[in-house]
Length: 524
Image (cartoon, rainbow, N blue to C red; front, top):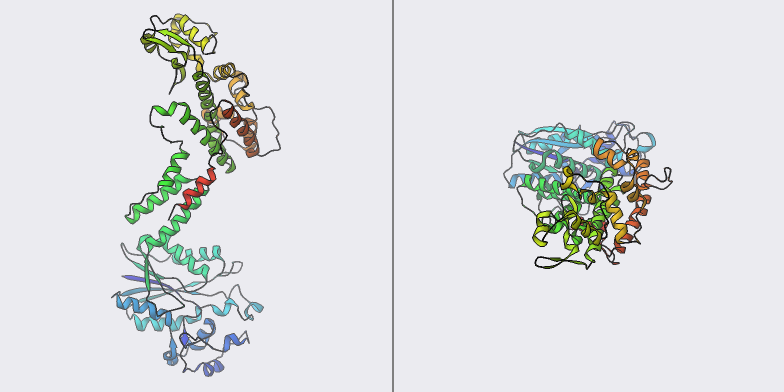
């Protein structure tokens, strides 16, 4: 059973040159609320030589005069019906969308020459039913009327018209794998757009749109399958999601559409952006992940992402990433300074640089394991390890050992406070920012206010003031600045230290917003 949904516009019913309009108009018992010539005087269309009047007055005059229906013409509808006939399509259900704004347009509003009241099509229903029955004798005719209520806006208002249309088309159900043809060009732009959008969302790939060049109806009707419209609509939504900083959601949206349509498409720039948001750059899945250059790039990228998250008030993601970025920075900065140390130790197979004895692993920053030290040196003792630490400018561990904890003698070197202390020894000009100082050096009794710990260990909530306190290292509690202003101050100091340790150059980094725009513009 084939279904046709068709919107009816102000000029879709006309009358031929030989007509009885003036006679029927003068004998109409309707109390005309408007004396404007636009209602009573037909206008000739030079293109088709037919005459037209506003739809409401057309229906008032002709609807009860069935013997005169032969002088009426339906130029646009005839084109669609001809398409059905040429393609042997048997229409069994017609949903005819009409309009009636009489509840919201009253009094003086009906007396204006261009009042939407007179362009309403509801009075054309008897005429249209007769016409459709002649064309499709077995078809079921279902009128649907867009009728705004008092307090609602007219049919030129996009949002309200969308809601009305959604409720109206909610009653239309299709059988499985049934195609629905939709002619939605007539009516106001808001009405046409609403019918298109709701049809796409409700019927998906089963919707086929019939398009006609209204300025040249001699051109053939064009069928546009829903996939073309769906893709355009979904691409616009995907672009919006990307620019909002949600590239993963955009990619999922497009991949779901491809699956539904049975298509296979690639989105290289969008996939690259998703990797960027996940800090999944080159080397992330290999041994390069914990090396200076790729790790530094992740820090730079993370700072840009944090700024975006804070601007969107996504504080949880921003706080978590900032804590990780700080800890990663300390390890990377230490490795960079250590790599500049030229001291060597005599090894079994020749001199070994002291910088080669430090390793960054998934567990953190440590001396290389004893079994590897044994390969290079004749005898590995705690005293030898302490010598290594001194040459690395780390200093002595400075805590008591016993036989039970020999394996963990150097575990403490990966604590944040030890990393910060070590970094200060390696670079005396280092200027840690307040948040980094507090998070590394806070005494245990002050750990409760730590927002990051509360989030990670207790799943606590967060508000703007708490975020500002955290970013300020709890030094000032009532900053008048916004979260993003406070973060930008932290970011400025963070980036200054990246440059101090020669981890990044002075060149301008690619803007995150440019990445977002490029990825959005790549979608077609």
